[in-house]
Length: 366
Image (cartoon, rainbow, N blue to C red):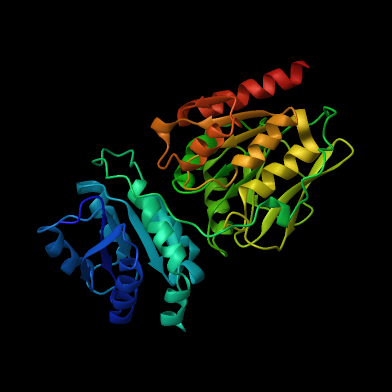
């Protein structure tokens, strides 16, 4: 028995995927593959003998599709599930259903060149499994053993996209802005927050770590549930009250100021903190152009993206909040921001809408 390792089951109808994924994940000393299965029916029989800590799951499979299997797991014994599917590229609506059913991470895989892609994406896959292994499901799942600290290679900071020069937003404007950054567990957390906000809410800009071609459908789903308007950001969109703009997957989003008005720039650029879009890039841009006219909120997610940018927001006079540990799926991002002194106050997920309303009231009274 391997003490402290994350026990993983791989469920995919492709023998190549099962073999390569198992090889890739097994190279990490903190991960153990305990079983593979070609479809959910075989998986259920294996799980009667040993239950995994994390399940890596395809969507299209014989006898039972992945989303039906996911829903069954969450109803019977909630377990962190990472979706690894080519449908993430071609059918983002299906991926929305997977997230709604309880998936904690999404990995896209191409329909061609699969073996090479899986080897090239080894780090992404290992990080996704470790994030899932740390996830605290809010549906009564048993606590998992914490994963060993992730060993990461040197990473680019927000300097790669936006300079660390003096902030330009020291003067308070007539408009205020709210910037939110999140990752693992963020899709459900954002839904919980945004659906509670009234239409009169200040303009919101959001970075949610998400695969390319996926954020548009995510924004559309939120838009159908919320009083405020929610959509994927386009270059030069104005940040308007009653609207939330979500950074497109695969692009960085920055906020710029023109007089008293804010707008976004959607740009290419290198990975920052191993992410594109990066929360640090968004937060630093808000610090520079909005200063005391901004509220920054860092929510559930693995890693430290956003911590330095939130600190810059606080130094520029903005208000800063971090989601508390109890309500996070993964406490990594808020924890790192707290360590840096970037967070003025921690709040529960349920308390974030009220904190936004309080920011709005205080801003309008100044």
